[in-house]
Image (cartoon, rainbow, N blue to C red):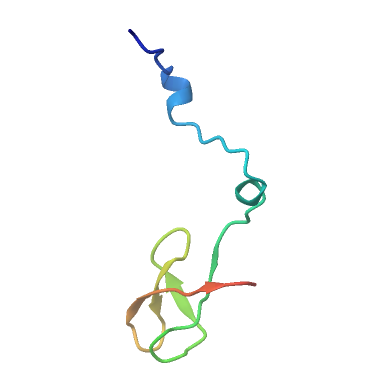
Length: 67
């Protein structure tokens, strides 16, 4: 028995019926350094999840924020 093949255009599309996932907002990350609590840091990743502190110069994984 041969199964139906998925077309290449549909293969990587993410579809869900879950209202929680569909209404989910993008994640925001805190700019506060986890080592020295300085309120200024530079993002190292485009989403801001990994940052570099402007004071102590350490690199850190940013905490998720509600703001």
